[in-house]
Image (cartoon, rainbow, N blue to C red; front, side, top):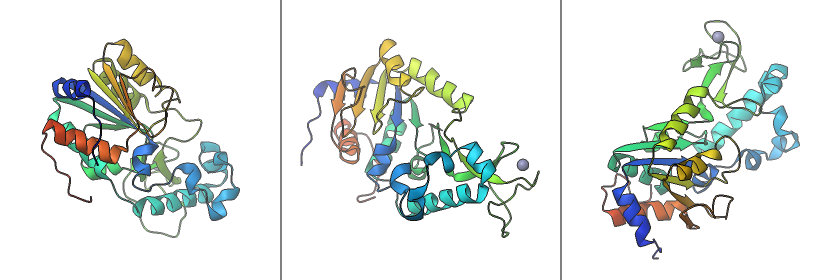
Length: 254
Ligand SMILES: [Zn+2]
């Protein structure tokens, strides 16, 4: 199979020194990670998302919310990063100033080896104290569901951004600063309609950067992007790396 990659895009990428990549659910869908709604099968189908993923829901029924995230962690553990995640690690290593901004909570970019990154919506593998907000990496094994914070004895919650919560200030600032100064912005597998994230590619464009979109479907960004490609990211990104002659860490079939 040969993919059509515009020469101009290859030139832009090979000369880019500051690159920001934004990823969304589409990149992990290629690994088989279900979205929030797709994970709402079986007993979970009866709930409104606001009963499973808001601070109010957790305050009302912490066990239910904790178990919903346990279920989603299990689904994520059945999948693994794909060639698109691995290609972004190669890109990070080839580009002088690189930032990966993800809306995904599955931690797959980190697992693949990305390090210059911001997880805007947190990471489902981490927990934090519901009362005090600090991230908790370890908790004693007890029968408590959810487990309890060792410092305040309050319940622990997943370290993800729930409906009605804002993206952490620092993460957002890092994403916007890097975007304002980038020369190439790449949007992958995101519909790019939810604010404030939807502003990122527009900011890049306004500041003179080129914009590449990789998405299976057309989005609001498609008409504004310099290039909008419908290929699978897990095929297109490794091919881009290959054509540019960048070294790759990806293992076949990873
Ligand atoms: Zn605490």
